[in-house]
Length: 310
Ligand SMILES: NC(=O)c1ccc[n+]([C@@H]2O[C@H](COP(=O)([O-])OP(=O)(O)OC[C@H]3O[C@@H](n4cnc5c(N)ncnc54)[C@H](OP(=O)(O)O)[C@@H]3O)[C@@H](O)[C@H]2O)c1
Image (cartoon, rainbow, N blue to C red; front, side, top):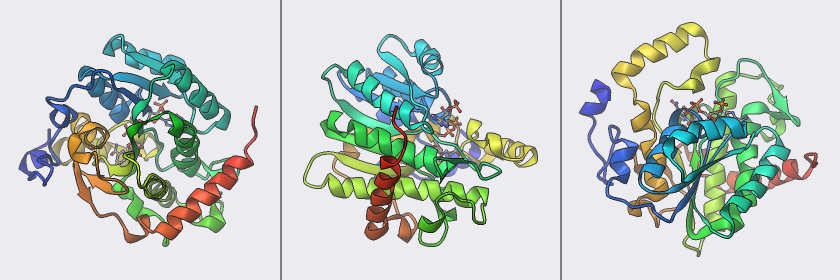
């Protein structure tokens, strides 16, 4: 915990900047519940899996390879299963949907925590004609979540790990006429776009889930020094690490908001919102625009429909 963390007040939920994933789940029994966590082998995903398992939950964790997922989850005990889900490979994501359903063998997912992500790739990379951060962070998770909706519990929750960096998305949120990112590529703009896409996806999913007990929300975990910064230049990365110990959250604090929204009773009836420090917050206005959210859903469906299968 940084000095800054210690000085921050708590919000209406009773938790705040300095709360940890263990704090926000204290006293909760998650026995009999199942959680899917993407990117379970590193950073916030690993801490989320650890704490939800510690509270008795069954963890289905995904990583780029099954070996990575299983190796990360092994120390957490027996009630875990590691599966491959390479989010930039549609066939891997589709196989993951099948493997998750097989692992569930009729059980339901209580919360689906879409945590995996990449940030600020230095040059424009693409998958199937889509900028790679948008594909990995948004399209990959879109295939996963929509494929698993029929396995979501009646009161199941979908948590999209977005970022305050959604503020760096282009004006209007999504450049629908530049999904490849080839025109004027900029690393932070592209990352911001992928993270506002997480917000818009949660918004539209929440709208589609209206009238049910299921929820969909997006969160910003805080700023935490993790492997996510691997693509930053070495000087900025070093400054990030040094400042981190003074100002930023540590991983235990960083995993709190996604754990709170995934399991805490205080979040059970809230849907379509953006959360920061385990409290509801306001994102950029175009991050909640229903028309943009609906358009993104439709455009993503079109992208997914033309992806190769097999
Ligand atoms: N750390 C922060 O300050 C911060 C701030 C705001 C938002 N976030 C968000 O928090 C989430 C977790 O990030 P983190 O900080 O914990 O970073 P991290 O330690 O780098 O973890 C990211 C996870 O995503 C996985 N991943 C990356 N590309 C993937 C792909 N193509 N297919 C499947 N898995 C993939 C990584 O796998 P490998 O280990 O194999 O690469 C890793 O497990 C991200 O969505 C990030 O955008 C983080």
